[in-house]
Image (cartoon, helix red, strand yellow):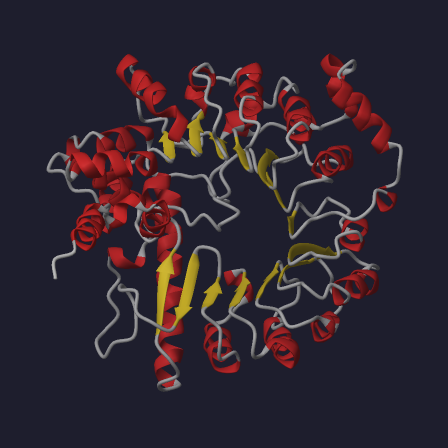
Length: 510
């Protein structure tokens, strides 16, 4: 029997698309790359309407790009969709004037095209305005070059701005080496006390992090950046500063518990009181200064949620590694700056007693590790997925192209070299293509050694390696511009940089 109501219901259901359900669109976009999301609005008008908010969710205003009037109009038309914004230093002042107010993730950065590159300092008021206009910002990353700190106005203004944002839960700040004094650390911990869950502070050198090259115009003494409370001279009447001074009169141990889950700070910070006050800590770094090994070990052993530890050693006792036997099972650990040769093997043995079935990442300096250590780790830790040596990463399981398990000879091709920095790499050295080539040559020798030991041991499990220094990060500014504009050697539109490109730039002396 004909039921008109039933047909009407079927007709309505046919008009409903899966793209009309926001949760489904959200789920789809989570599995798409940024490039794919940008392509979706170009499919048809319906998709343009559906995917426009997602295409504009993440915006990067690069130093290579030019902010034309048309670009600015387009940004203003779509600013309500922007949630994640990265801005190169030279565009910060212009972007801060656009009234963006919906940003949840903000990155302010300089792009260093060479060790001699020096830009103009960013207007401090513009930086603070951009931060203050976005009351709901949850993540802030600051990576501005040293010349922004010469006036000593940036650090105090940023500290007070951070304190005005209770919504902030993640802070990453790369500061010039010399700023990270005890006064700076106390001020920073004060403004981060109530809300920050992840705090990462990296002290970067003022010049190339390669022994072969030190730029004269970057060779500025750390005394020029030393932070002190006197730098707050322009803010003495600000309520935030008055509150800060009162808090600093109270010892850190009496501030009450921190909410920190991740803590990564320079070794000059005295982290012991902070570790004692952060019971929920899951990831931290520590330095075993002589005479405090017992104290720090006791605190670390009491952190039941600890899953990652970055351990920096300047301690020469050959038996210090037994402390690892007291820790809870770890998933990720970095052991850096080992002073005594052959320390790494006993460290692995100590780790195996507590973390054999939990460890997924093991990291160290290449200088501290032998090829046999890498293969031994793949055998001892069955869940190990990654061995991180800084500019070399070795992955266990799966296939990633490039140099991986095969019956043939090793093939050092572009698949081995990453195209861009890994976001997890805390230290990103600055240098020229000559420095890149030297590291690449060193990496090839080590990877060959690892491969030789691996093949001798027989079939353990699949493994592949990566060289973690992208060619583009070491190109001259001229080559970056030519590459971006498809001009010169890249006139044909090739997008992937090759080893031959690196060799050509090396031979040209740029």
